Length: 228
Image (cartoon, rainbow, N blue to C red; front, side):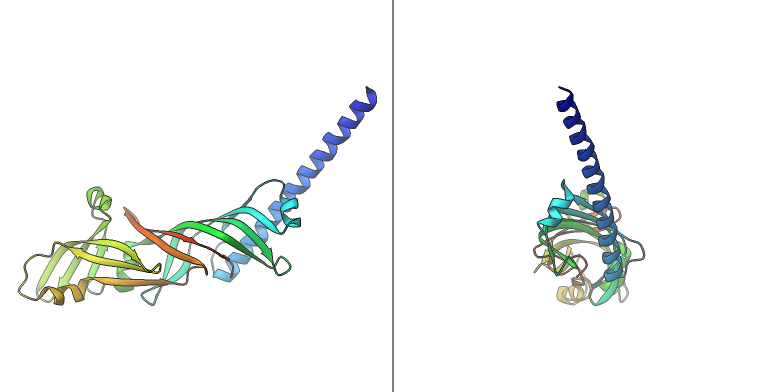
């Protein structure tokens, strides 16, 4: 009985030491990944990185992590060819392969979201039209307010948003009023297709939704490397 108690005591001790070592290792790895993403993406602050699954050390031996979550702000992308900072970037990476002697981590699959403000979208390509929140009823229809300044005419319209080709947010004005100019002339001024580039390789746009603070882009992809 004494021997059994001693054995159990040793198992508890070694188990505690293993758990402690495992947590130290995962904390170190999270810091390293965060710094690499910050450096490669030119972020002002390190992102928050969480490596999921236990134990971590056995995942490292197998060179595959169960999943990784990352949250960051200030990621620069190009919208219509203009640099824009996206905020509230949340990415979930699944089945992450550790490659090139652990210098890179590539996820088999990824999902996420990011936000672009109305002001940044306006500056990126509205050309004579400013975008703003149109209220809950219009937001439920995925529409934004469009304040347009045409020659001798100022209009307030509503524009719907949709994603095209996995990399473009298209704005299409709804219910144009009768004007003393052809509709295609007006649409050439206010309808836009804003191509978004510079996202981590492998991520593409799935859909866009609007809320009070801007447009939320929903992302998905495969073979994604946040630091690549």
